[in-house]
Length: 103
Image 1 (cartoon, rainbow, N blue to C red):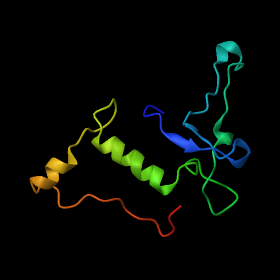
Image 2: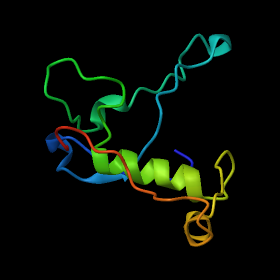
Image 3: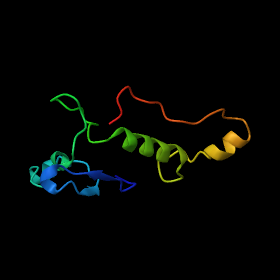
Image 4: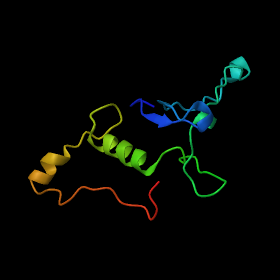
């Protein structure tokens, strides 16, 4: 959510893209009246009828987000300079692992 990553919405939302937002369970002091559930609007990528919680992310999305976490200097990110590590031979290679079926 911090990086304002856009995910594809379901067909009934015209396959548009919108920034990722987490569901908000609400606060007990308001008797959960401020609850916000929006996860159902995102398109899911799965082979079965029971998607995992990360099914809203395509393989490409996951790779991009992980790369951002590794290389960005944003809050809660590692800020590692991959190019510099490769140049200094401290890192031999940097590439994402593949899945048997890319989504």
